Image (cartoon, rainbow, N blue to C red; front, side, top):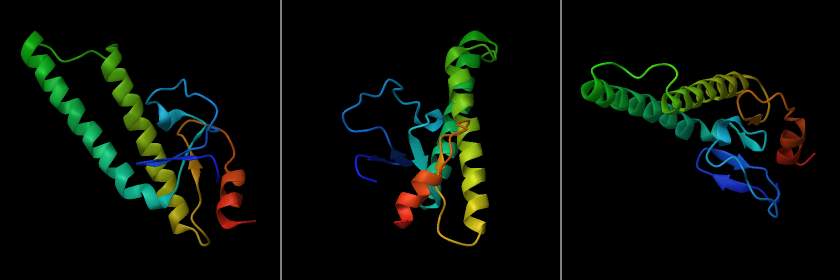
Length: 124
């Protein structure tokens, strides 16, 4: 996979001469791919996100007397990350149980096919 950037939780498949406009939204980007070798990092990321949400909720409640509402932009973004991580981890665990080489998956919520990624990983 020439031209890809290695991330802590997967790979960015954006061609090297193109700029990323997503910022840190890799989990839902169609240029993000990962496989079961990244499961430990993805699981840790999901746990840290849940812990961060809980800490921020507690701080917000202590400051304002009420929890953050569902319409809070920060909370909505973290919930989207949690959801994406959950779907990616579930898919990777399902593909890991299947026979054959590890299967790559793209960002959660992306309907793009991964057959091009998996083909380049196994050399066919």
